[in-house]
Amino acid sequence: MSKKITLEDIFNDDEFGILDSKPTGSNIKTEDERLIESFEEINTFFEKYNREPEATSVTEFKLLSRLNALRQDAKKIEILKSHDVYNLLDTKEDIKSVADILEDDDLGILDTDDSLSIFKLKHVSSSKERAESDFVAQRKAIKEKEFLPYESMFKKIHKDLREGKRKLFTYENADKNLKAGSFYVLNGVLLFLKETNIDTGLVSLPSGNRVRKDGRTRIIFENGTMSNMLYRSLDKALLHKENDGKIVSHTESEIQKELFNNVNSVNEEDSESGWIYVLKSKSTNKEISSIADLYKIGYSTVPIQERVKNASKESTYLMADVAIVDGYKCYNMNAQKFEALIHRFFAEVCLNVDIFDDKGRRITPREWFVVPLPIIQKTIILITTGEIVNYKYDSLNQQLIKKTQDN
Image 1 (cartoon, one colour):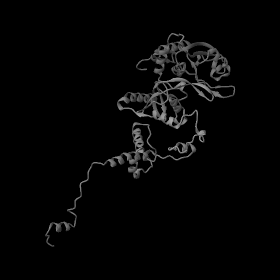
Image 2 (spheres, rainbow, N blue to C red):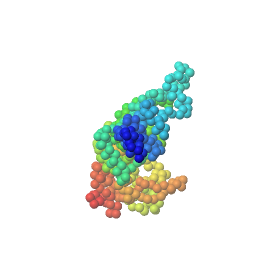
Image 3 (tube, helix red, strand yellow):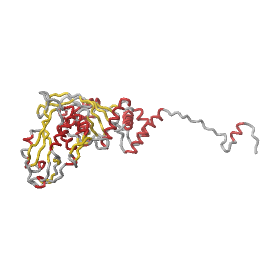
Image 4 (cartoon, rainbow, N blue to C red):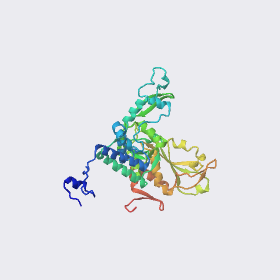
């Protein structure tokens, strides 16, 4: 073993690297590292769901907002280029049509005064106008504190749907279905139409002049966002097949409250809603005529006599003439909801019989009930006063009984 003379001899003779040392690394992440880490969350989401995040939940909305912000920042795109394994930052869209070429003409190279007059649509808003409109109506995140009251509402709606207190129905049209204070489902997301600031105006169309309602709305979505899209835009979105638009029904107690609030003395400002009627069949069919206390309870938008004049040819009237037993003219109320409430109340005694029309088609009418007339009349009164919530029908003893905590 040779003698060590200097420190340098000792360091050079460190065969096992005992004296080697490495600089201690910093735990503080750089700005670029934080940027990459935040983008990797988006990559992880894409790997899991094989799609970009959407505005369907608070979590997804945050990722979507982050991705959109990154797409607008060229410097960050450059930093993340090697990490963009799913091409999520590529904002260039494929040009598939002449329209795409015209829309992509940022420098206006294709613009001329006359030669492109065929592309100047007189009755269609420009792409810029549509873009501005869409921008105004974009969903915006609601502050967590402001969203709390709505969050509890949405949870209650989901609970009611699970328990069958509410149902989902296909959305049909604005005049019939689009009302402030109601809930809807758009693309699987529950929304609350809080306000509708509607203006009615006359518009000129190729088919003639039309009266059209439109205006801004205020919509709250269950994912913590809000929008003020146009009334007609919401209507079109709910009607579009791909969006699977649904309307959430009111609960029975809400319907009863609405009916009660709208039952007032009739004056010249009140509007006629329709007729609730009670009919008895004149059928000679023993299967029908042998049933005591069999009545049809229905709704009509036209006078009852007009509605039943062809009863013998309609399966809903059991293919027989009917006698008008009772009728109620309705004002300031939704007579269809009134009818639906009565049907639910007497659902247990609904007639279950198959009727064949003149073409041999089998139909099962659902508006005939086996219940004494005085019970029907009293039930209608209880609905209009709002007291029906305290009663149920005892079909065995054929009487209305007050509900208790046990039933």
